[in-house]
Amino acid sequence: MKEETTTEIMDYQTRIKQITKHLRHVQKLEDIAAELEYLITENQENKDIVKLIPASIKSNIFSLIDGFLEKSIEADSILKELESLKN
Image (cartoon, rainbow, N blue to C red):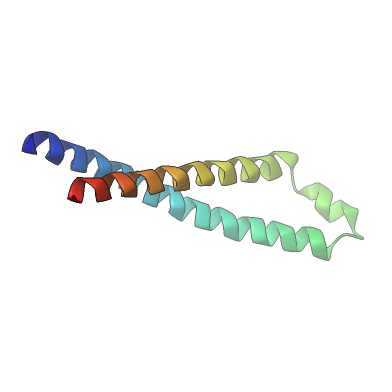
């Protein structure tokens, strides 16, 4: 029983490390998104600059934000499971 619990905790630790790495990437993406948003809002009149931002980049940012939300939900469930193991 104790060996199973140790294995479970190690699995959680691995998942938490993966989520932490993912969150670091998301922070970088948030910075990029903020820069893109600034470019778009400050250059509404100059449509040429906005056209320089590929649609694929805009689409990828939204996909990555969705991934971030999924990871946040996963992190919450891991924390709850770890709390239940303490009891």
